Image (cartoon, rainbow, N blue to C red; front, side, top):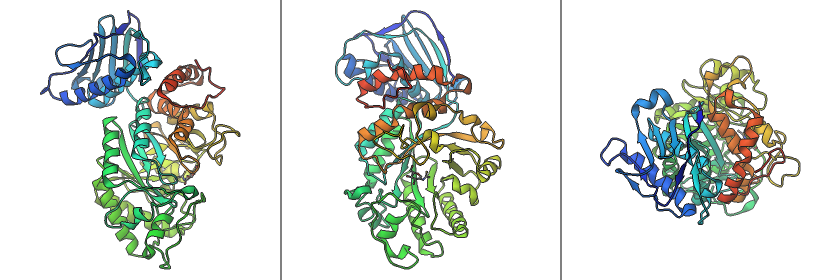
Amino acid sequence: TAAVAPGGSPYEITAETGIRVPPVGAAAGVAARTTAAYLAAVLRPATGFELPVDSRSGDVELRLRPGLKKAVGPEGYELTSGGDGVVISAARPAGLFHGVQTLRQLLPPQVEADTPQDGPWPVAGGRITDEPRFAYRSAMLDVARHFFTVEQVKRYVDQLALYKYNTLHLHLTDDQGWRLAIDSWPNLAEYGGSTQVGGGPGGYYTKDDYREIVAYAASRHMTVVPEVDMPGHTNAALASYAELNCDGVAPPLYTGTSVGFSSLCVPKEVTYDFVDDVVRELAELTPGPYIHIGGDEAHSTPHDEYVAFMERAQAIVGAYGKTVVGWHQLAGAHPVEGAVAQYWGTTGGEQEVIDAAKAGTPLVLSPANRTYLDMKYHEGTPLGLSWAGYVEVRQSYDWDPGAYMRGGVPESAILGVEAPLWSETISTSDHIEFMAFPRAAGAAELGWSPAAKLGWDGYRDRLAAQGPRWEAMGIDFYRSTQVPWD
Ligand code: TNX
């Protein structure tokens, strides 16, 4: 809920500006220092200023005040700016981090450049009190159809952090590739990760690579939600271990883009040894609460077998202390207590999803005709798919997550919003950025801002102002004619 009271004189960041943090030893002083160091690192290249971090002085102050929790929640912040300086206060480190993102947005766009730029560097005067509408604000990257390196994932994480995303969903396995090393089943990554769509070399994350991604995301206050998609979307696993197949014969690796042709062998016990080992090792690598077990498009799994499989897979996730997330087909099985369903339809009208939500299954909304970042913007978009239609910038933004589902699903059943980027046609960071921007910024606003602050007319002007910022960041975004770019 953002309350903005503009007014007063601006503060100007100069060569004399420092960043003030609580003393070492003060509770949470470490977290404030980490965020201060991050802020200084963001501002230094363009401004050329040193921006020292100190507990005794500094016009830009980061304050942790646990008592603010009532006012701004665990992720919100207050920012006041005037002639003497800027103060960002929050109850929790995540709130400070989000306040720092707002400070970035208050500065001229060229502050995002990685080479020295001309100032001045004014921060408008005023006072902002701000906290998110939804707790789960996620972006998904499909690293299975095309593999993306640790550096590519980090780059995307940094871009998402600017828009206060707090969740990174990694789609780690699919028919075309298995992208995470599992010690007890080494062929999964070594063989199952050895190709990708189009037949390129693919790749996989070692456990150390993966820990590096998780730690980097955490440094941007983003929780990684790993997905191992089952029982369909499993050709890479089936190709790696013959015993996982009902007929005992491993299929070849797959480099096309069809869906729905593979299934784990539900009646075989070894299937659950496999799921147990994978989930155990994944849970060990996962500080966050969630493990996503997929469950979408299991067209080759008979329905009764699907239900039986999801039952056992959910129990395994629970046994390792994690909360299940599944694509919304999970609603047609028996979601366990606490399990989250991720909606990817286009109407908000599927009765079993509505019923599950009303019975207490929280929903993450990623309607394919709204938030799917892999949908083409229009007929001529060189990348992307169009099975859910063309998704122009207005189409992607102009809906209300709290009022989206039909059948009387209340806003309280909505845990949050996700913008997924499937990678059948996406293989470089330039591709990611062209499809994600501007649409990822819109999904972020839908996840953060209250319903009363949403609206295309205001949004397109706010969005227009992001253009020069993306240019400064080296992001080659889609210059939609719907937006009056600055
Ligand atoms: C549907 S949405 C899929 C993915 C594809 C995507 C392409 C969902 C849960 N499954 O397997 O990559 O469409 O847009």
